[in-house]
Image 1 (cartoon, rainbow, N blue to C red):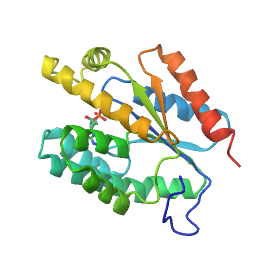
Image 2 (cartoon, helix red, strand yellow; image 1 turned 90 degrees about the vertical axis):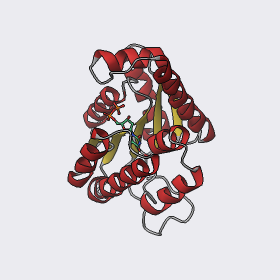
Image 3 (cartoon, helix red, strand yellow; image 1 turned 120 degrees about the vertical axis):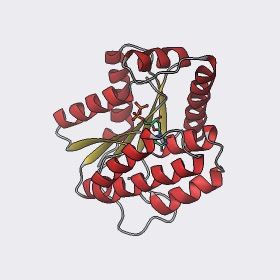
Length: 220
Ligand code: TYD
């Protein structure tokens, strides 16, 4: 867990929270699984989880929100936030508290980008919800897997997760990509951008390098 202004005393834990972010087809899920395996092999107790979801009620919210998209942007924001609050309470906080590392496929930055940049929800409102629902469980490290719109959409289409592949969806994918890049630039201490268009094994090496340099070398 990352220390932040106003964190309650005694909230520091030994587990680390690593999140993967990026657009559709960026390879997050594969990389999250591989990182968790590698951490496990290094004798670091680790769980891999995802958003929306990662806890029984949060998975139900996932079904609700993903089956009826697009809903009103504010509806989505609140449902993703509710799923996240549950995920933190049931899965993330207990794991980190027990010293287990948590690798999460999507987290707060997805809300900032999809509901903020794309949905047009006021950023201050999103941050206010975060303060009330996420605090103090901010990520120690966020890995942004960056892929161009065309590559990402081709991959998503190939695995059957995407039906639209038109100019409007390409433009939106590019907007999502830019949103993550802007966030990473604004929070360099927490975020690392990796080229998700490279072969899987190379991305995995870059992920491992970032994790060892940023977290393992400094873990005490
Ligand atoms: P998912 O099927 O998990 O796809 P992906 O492989 O892209 O992660 O779908 C998750 C979708 O939910 C994706 O379109 C991003 C969106 N999302 C939000 O809009 N806000 C959020 O806070 C989160 C966690 C996800």
